[in-house]
Structures are given as structure tokens and as C-alpha cells.
Image (tube, rainbow, N blue to C red; front, top):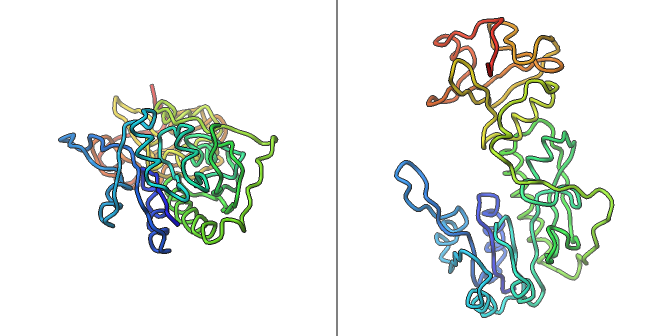
Length: 302
């Protein structure tokens, strides 16, 4: 098939690679423009742009697809289908209608649950037992289009980063299967029941709320690993918790309950197992406490 591939972050790279390996004709790759990155703030291409260029594919990085020239350029590719994976730009009607077989999306949730920008993080935060990917036909609404295939996976104790990697690969395999015989995967309308929305993550959400149940705090830590990173403040410094486990011991919310970094929550307590002091590398709690006093009875976020 003649395919236009549209994606930006690491999540979208396996899909591109899988379709190339399957022998499809990738006539164009669309990605968001390079962004400033690193200490020097030099422009850095997105992971999809970098991979597409390495594969020798033509890449387009428009700021928007709303103007007539951008839309005409898209139409000129004469694609059979567009495959979209975390592209990040709104597709106008002229773009949605251009490919002969429409636009197909790799969405990282079991629709209609978690339509929107941050389905993986929201699934973890909500304590969902399972999540997955859905291949869907795109339409003007926010992830409202009919579904063609799903892949289900347990959430367990995975971080957002681990789930993203897993679902990116699963979505790539599933999309390749669908495109082998599109007619064998007829579109099925999404049910009206069970609709939820995965709002974009606000960095302020990463501040740990120790008044919450310890299980909710542990989910917050996993949902924001690797980014933006769940954190608390102590002694005027910020500490990111990369991993932790729940304990049953009770105490005041935000209080250090022992000399080994057990922190009280609204119910139960949380013990970090990997922590990062500002400006330092992530380390085990024992390593941190050898050079930094965090004594029992004191409080974090004072």
C-alpha cells in the first residue's frame, strides 16, 4: 500500500519500522518540527523524523496542516492510507479525507476508555488492571472513530515508560496485521458506555500528594516515570521518586516514619526504592542517606 506515516515520539517509531519491513511504500513521513533540546538548546528532530531520515524516507515537518498549501501537499501523495501514531497535530477534514482508505490511528488505550492525550498515564493513575492499543479509523472527533482491532495487556506494576515501550511494539504489530487485509478488519462503532478522557499531563500533577492512599501514591510514581517525574521537597531541595513499594505502617501524611525513608500517607506508607536528588543521578535510598540526613519524625514538603 501507498502509506503516509504520521508520528512524532518514540512511541511511533516501531510502527514506522514495522510497515517498512512489511514492504509497504512509505511515500511520506510527517512529524512535528524539531524542538530545542539539551543545554545548548539546539534544534533536535523528533524520534520519528530521525528514524525516517535514517531509512531514507521523505520527511515533512509542518507547523500546522490547516493552510491550503500544506493540505494540497498532503493530497499530492496519493496515499491509499495514512497511519497516525501520536502525531500531535490536528488533522483537518481535507487531510482526513485524502487517503483512499482513510486515516488509521494507533491509540494506546482500549477505546472508548481513555480517549485523548495521555491514555497510558491515566490508566496507571486510575488503577486500571488492563490497558492496550486500539487500531481505529480517524474522524473529526477526539478518538471517536470506529475500531478495527485491539490488543489487551495487563498493567501490573509497570511504569508509564515500560507500558509505552510495550504498547508501541504491540500497536506496530497490530497495525501491520490490519494492513495485510484491511477488509478482514471491518470498522466497529465505539460503544456509548465507558467513555473516559485522558487529559494532557500537567507538570503540577507530578508533586506527590502524601495525603492520598499509599497505593494511589505508588501509582502516581509509576505514571510519571520517566516524565515528568513524581517528586517531593525536603530541606529546600526537590527529590524525584523513580520507584517505590507500599507498606502497611501508618503515620502522619508526609512524615518520615523511620530512618530509612519510609513516608506516611493518608492510608499506609510508601518506601522509595530508587530516588534522585536534584542535580544527581538516581540512587538507592541507602546511598542517598549516607550523605543526606532525613531523620524519622521530620516531614517532607514543609
